[in-house]
Image 1: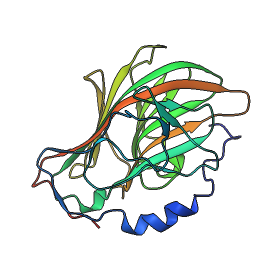
Image 2 (image 1 turned 30 degrees about the vertical axis):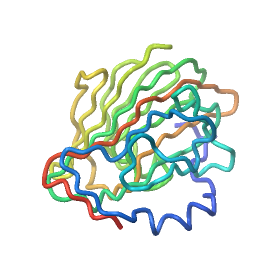
Image 3 (image 1 turned 45 degrees about the horizontal axis):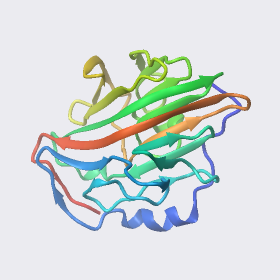
Length: 235
């Protein structure tokens, strides 16, 4: 683990004021998409809304002190800096037997050293401590499929070749407390989480040590709920 990196950085004040009222509507989801973001806009990711689908009126948060990732050419451009961006979602309100699936197309363009990208579910802005079902993608294309909280319970994932888009999918089953990982629709495996997590967001995490680099894009992000009666009561 990179000891030079500190993931817990001060949150932006605007985020603190919006968290208590993340959800202002009730959505009945029968195999329905909660978020779908094609990133078909230009400008900062922070404060923008997923489009074309955003059933909870959520906006992208960013816990970093810099300006964070930008969106252009229908992609989230991975910044060469430490950052943690997220979309809030009230997983605790899911009805029994619902299954949650997060997917995206990720392209790793370049990288050096120990830099990495995290992608998945969490319940705070600290991927190492509280991320629950997530992927860790390093600059040499090696991936870990992790079922936390934390980062110690994992299996190897598929390799990420440079400049080749890979469709990743993370499916979490709360009833079984298990996470299944897919790369280009091929199952990498299923892991039982260390404990039943209290997830409240999906996240993308960039961790860059001094002198390291990483670049790439994320496209076609989607959060989908299926199974059970599929009803979420927004809070």
